[in-house]
Amino acid sequence: MPLTDYVTLGRSGLRVSPFCLGTMTFGEDWGWGSSVEDSNAIMDAYIDAGGNFLDTANIYTNGHSETIIGDHVGKDAVRRDRLVIATKFLGNMYPGDPNGGGSHRKAIVAACEQSLRRLQTEYIDLYWMHFWDHLTPIEETMRALDDLVTSGKIRYVGFSDTPAWKCAQAQTLAQCRDYAPIVALQIEHSLVERTVENELLPMARELGMGVTPWSPLKGGVLSGKYTRANRDTIEPGRGEWVKNNLTDRNLDILDVLVRIAAEVGASAAQVALAWVQARDGVTSTILGARTMEQLTDNLGALEIELSAGQTAALDEVSEMPAIFPQSFLPFTRSIVRGGTTVNGEATEPWALSPQSDAERW
Image 1 (tube, rainbow, N blue to C red):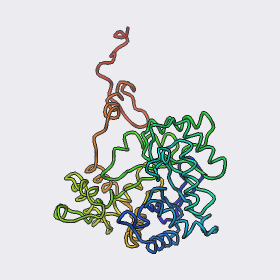
Image 2 (cartoon, helix red, strand yellow; image 1 turned 90 degrees about the vertical axis):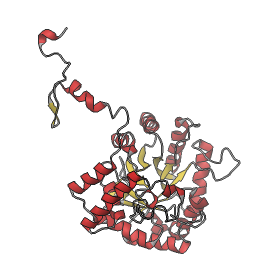
Image 3 (cartoon, rainbow, N blue to C red; image 1 turned 90 degrees about the horizontal axis):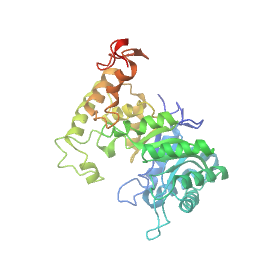
Image 4 (cartoon, one colour; image 1 turned 60 degrees about the vertical axis):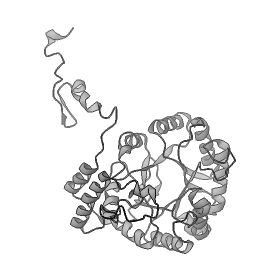
């Protein structure tokens, strides 16, 4: 699958590349990341390969990520219009100001205006609520976002890092009040982070939100460069955040990942990305390439096809216990279906159900 095999985002007509270029690493303001020159080169390589989907946020590298995008492609009207530029609001850029961040109307409108200025564009294609602000009524957030869509300053609405029940509440509110719907959901998802499969992924599929996973390599944990032999000696660029995830479970996943990568002639990172992109409901996986080499390697994942057996092996080693009620519901199938076969799935009769007409009251 090439980068130009575009897919529609959620229940919308917006076409995006199957891999999105994440730009949290654009700028060295946080002590790690890409220089302006390297960031521009990475953008050019991604766009030249046919990619059209850029993801950033107002707080990434203190606003520098947005500025880099604006200086390089935002001010070029022709080039900008061929891109889908997504950014996020909610993060507070003004310490000491309680209204400097959040999902209330004052913060949303101010953040949007500031992002438009840094991106040097008249509109934002996809505007994400970065995470849930429990202090703000969701009615206020959805109405403010709908007003921005109506004004033409944003085109589509997305949610990120928000509980499934709150996303469902917001989407239902949008449907009932004819507000702009949530077309996309950005959540962490990888071989080592599968808890989203309990609630968030099924919710997104049911309510028409295209999923764009972030950190599909868990900050490099699944890149293949960390092993049992070096986990106590290597110093990752993101420090404790990475080291804390070099657990025995994750290293077991890496063992299988590296084995399968050798079988298909690919890197561990490519196999990990191919696994995520193939998950049901995933639309476009976000790549966090800091170097040109990482981008080139990551894009190669689109050419990887895992066999059913290889996928099953990765599923098995990374499986996580279901949470309630998902852990309980499989036991109810026999109670509900009365021992019949529905949609090709057979059930056994429930042992405690009436076995004859005479046993029914």
